Image (cartoon, rainbow, N blue to C red; front, side, top):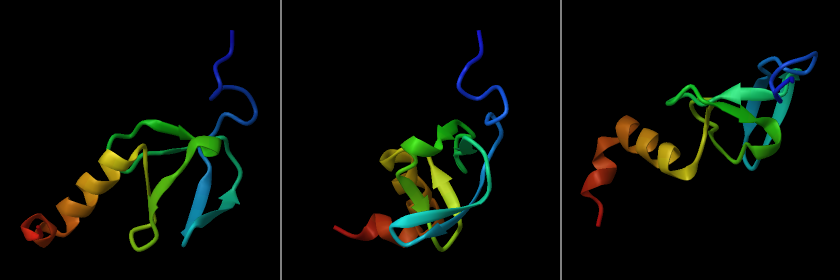
Length: 77
């Protein structure tokens, strides 16, 4: 039984992350989260950083990465 990351389309895609969209520069079926290294199927990719060109598996991980890169955000409130 093949899983969704096996077979001809089962390789990691290369992506250019844009504001509100992304552009596939090298075909594949998934990208890896920049923080957790989890595979993210392209049809489930919703969170990324345009500035860092990094994908994230979910909003929690995205926020944690933003705070890691900008600790001053913790002081807001």
